[in-house]
Image (cartoon, rainbow, N blue to C red; front, side, top):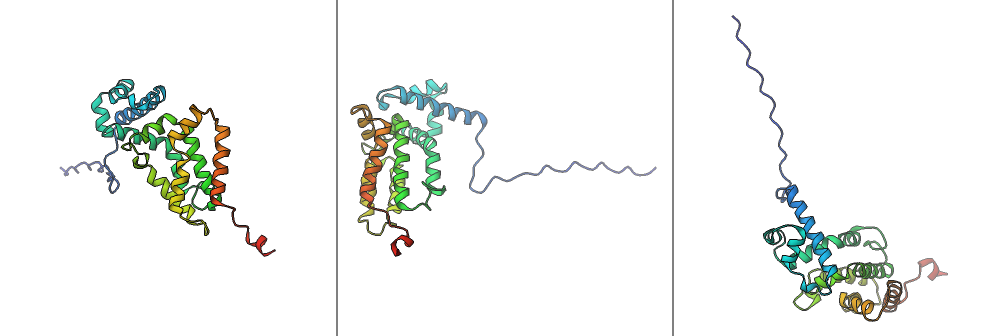
Length: 222
């Protein structure tokens, strides 16, 4: 009687190793919880006159999760505010880092600096509650709030391309001061200025600081 050939085992399923430096992908429920927490925090900060009155317990209840979920996902209240701010600001930050003109790094400084400041102003007008909450996490100083050094460096780098502009480091600080959330809140809430009034005023102020843009080479040689 001929020997029976053993059945061929099924091929092993290929395993894809995780990318270098990357941990396991978050579970679907963890991702949903994170989005629910960010949405709830955003809504509560907008509804309360003072962001400082919103507690982690308030956010957990509004999101339908336990407080432990918040602390496990964000560390503390400051971490939650920073995560929410970065999520909302991500499109502007991405455009400033490697996007096209007018925000991208290839834009001439006389065009890029006003565009960056206008984008930050519009963001703070649209998310005043969130910007105020973030600046309030900097130990009574908005300059320690985490996002500030990034935007200061971005502006300073652009300003350094203007040959006759003195002290680009200080100038970057001065220009960013015009977009502080507490100033935007004061101008809109107490002085009644609108978006349509604030944007051209900031643009005019910036243009005076930067001075005239250099003329194209063909015009200078004419």
